[in-house]
Length: 250
Image (cartoon, rainbow, N blue to C red; front, top):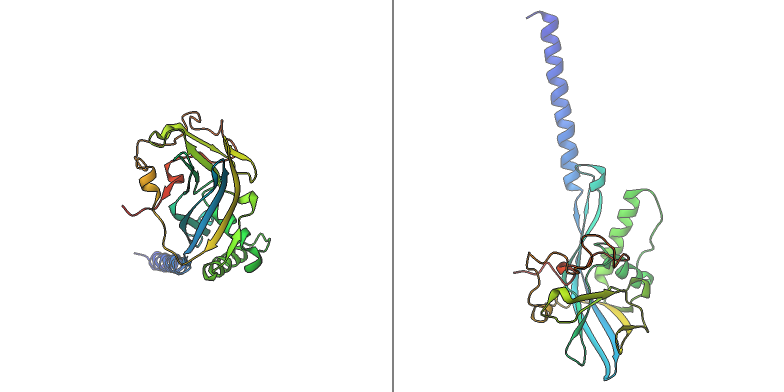
């Protein structure tokens, strides 16, 4: 092999090794950038007025989150959220139930509900296009939220959607509507208030005995009128089984 060709081959191998090292180092640093944030247990209590008097129900849900760096691409960067728990059931005098569902509008709907309800006790949010600054501040807020032991009313614009069934044993008899304080949900039943409490209490799993059919794979979305698009209930995400129960240990 000519000397010049041997030298070129050596140079190419050196460049390849250096490139591999840089990529490997970036991946290692990116992996170290992942941060699991502390869980936040919150108790949501819903109060309604009925012809037979006031009724309320509550459930404890775990709000879990983690920060992911921009690996494999920029779209992966940010704080991701997950709920572990159940919808809040409110038993009515006739034995039927209303449910404040777990998720609405977007998968992380509990995030603004929590952050806005306790905003006066958290580090202020910042408006910036710098994702790192935004995510660091958001992580600071979640850490601060996890240390609180406080109760606040839920701001009405962050109320969860209310769902109910004509027959709780028949999942496709579901109805759902936006929650509005002082307005009727079903005939004779008016929403009065919602409150949030940050707590050490364990996650509750009471809804299994109320809706024993939950998480059958064949259910899909429960509202037969939606047919895969947001036609009959456009303001909110489709109401499916995971709006009632999420992350239960089987």
